[in-house]
Image (cartoon, rainbow, N blue to C red; front, side, top):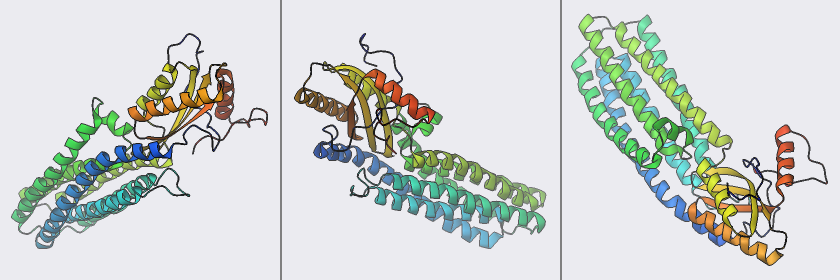
Length: 368
């Protein structure tokens, strides 16, 4: 909101896109520099979190499978499968991070950032299909065909070592997520995050620690009571934990993959910066699209003063671009369309109502 009396009250959540080839948004040097600055730090921190998680899960998986083979524990086998799935997930995340950093090309003018969202969604599916599915299957099988546990002390040693490994990875992930979330609450930060790497690892490690505690309880009850069905029940509970985790991850990564707007702060700052320019009568509204963790494309509708000629409007557009990209380097392209507030309201109303825009009132298509 720019606070000017001359700017009528209007819905600012979307805007028409400036036609291809217009002056606004045509500064590739600035856009590339902004993208590089924004991408480096976040990519490096996310890469570290995933590598730490991969190292911990490899060590844990080997230890669990050896223990499961010695003791015959169903819960331990489920935990081994869980860790193996986590290893695969970390490798897929690293692959997705590498692919998403490719330079823009003719087919992908805003880069390949959404490829990270795709692989994060695949990770969520693997957690559900392999992690949760195999764990529940093993648990049901063990309940139907219970077998006595041998050498339970090995299970305790392995579970203790696994908690140490997973705890190390979890601490690294939660520290990074705490730095990223700022003043936001934990769940709010998870819902608003545009970078799936850290919260995916954090959720996986949290589920892993919870599963280890359940496995420890199952092994202890099976040993104390002599009833091996507790071990199978623990495996089913582990599967349910993984299913819930996978559901949360799939929900958030699907939203990013399908396409979300940028955060509210980004949208508000674009309107504030544009509205504060003396040559802008009213910043009507803005539409944004998140193309990757560090890539945002925005389209702004602005009403310029009538006495301005083309060079003055171009200078104003340049100032707005510079201000927005200084405040939010992740905004790699800003398209600005000069139009009145009334035209803005009419076109947005038509788009939201699903009514075809007439030729005389035609607007360029919204970003996808």
